[in-house]
Image 1 (cartoon, rainbow, N blue to C red):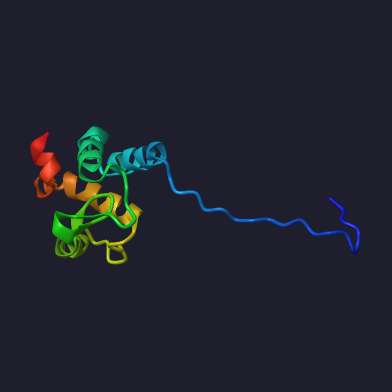
Image 2 (image 1 turned 45 degrees about the horizontal axis):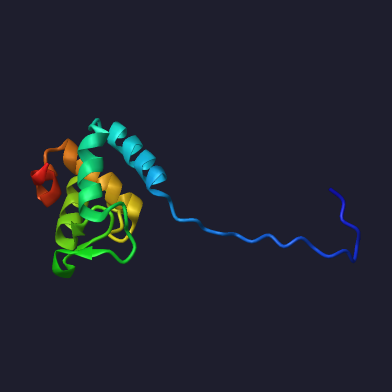
Length: 117
């Protein structure tokens, strides 16, 4: 497309849209598959723990955070065991990936909601 000199430029705005629960569910399903875990086993506890919300969501009296409601010491311990040194506690996708890993290796009972279902 040609734009004549002096013509008003186009303004392009970047709008970051948070993932909808459906998109989160797709990501969770993909990560579950990559770790060889049933997506339903992860989706139900996440829905119970956080309702698919992440930002600013603290539970267990402020000790747990995010979509997977990790306690910080548990997250740090699991990321070492999982060999995920760059995983960030505050990153939604890292929480999902680490949770899928945790379910794969038998740590699902760390989530209260998993024990309830």
